[in-house]
Length: 193
Image (cartoon, rainbow, N blue to C red; front, side, top):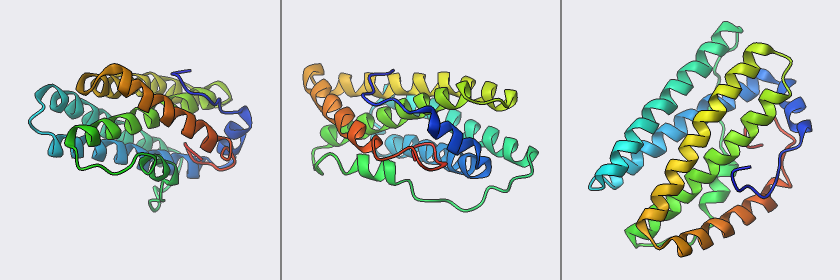
């Protein structure tokens, strides 16, 4: 799915279902971080008009998703709670060597963002398909579509800023790294846990 090399096992969905407050809290903060990332790209690459336009849309959508998750939590009597570190994203960001080349740095950010969106999409699908709770199943199924769209936007822009063959080599290496990392995961009530 989405070019990922590791598929989430349904056992992760069982873990997530057993701690809904935790999974929803984690999800809410991930939506905030995704919005922040889009805004940061706008700030750092403001001369890229087409990119700014798309990142504006993504930032707004991600904050709408945050609001939707938060409202769902409130409806169920949950409190948002405190932010937790996302070691998944941190490890992905460390995959690429730091560079002072603005274009290379942008491509790296776009590829990491694309992979985070792809994995979120895949996890939402697994969660939706293994959820007896109709409201949550429908909720995550709808969000899955949005995450897939964001994944394609990030990957499309990465391929526009550099030769596609080079970008695809970077993408394939990142996806392979992520697959190895995901084999160690799947045991916590976190979207990427």
